[in-house]
Length: 194
Image (cartoon, rainbow, N blue to C red; front, side):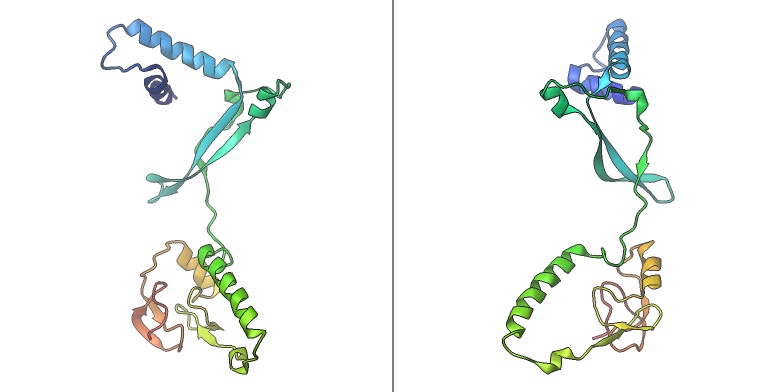
């Protein structure tokens, strides 16, 4: 907490440790800031969310989350529930959730929906029975038969296994299009041999 306060003092108050010759001023500033932080009610609190990576040795920033926001009550001069800094759990917040199969590559899904809607408009004019035929694909890890979709070339269990590491170039065993052994030439980035 002291490093946060020192950083706060460096930014907000323009105080730097190397320049200060009066240690009393610096100590008093830190003491005053700590007391202000702990004894005053919190109006707005936003914390970063990190995810531990590399077996917990490093952390990766995911997003920031607002834990408490009473600014509207303050602006409108209304009473609000007073909470203090020590009332909040300020430990490292982690997001361990992995994307589900449905949430996987959401940008591509939105593009697919747009393409499907324009395709549906065009196909309503003419009927093409060739496109009604279902195309089967194969899981590139297990070889099980699944619907062909180059963006989702895994079964659900194989996808969960892949999602632990998310290595797009990990060499897989089977071709998504034909189901033949690929001898490591397929991957999530390139699921079909041709």
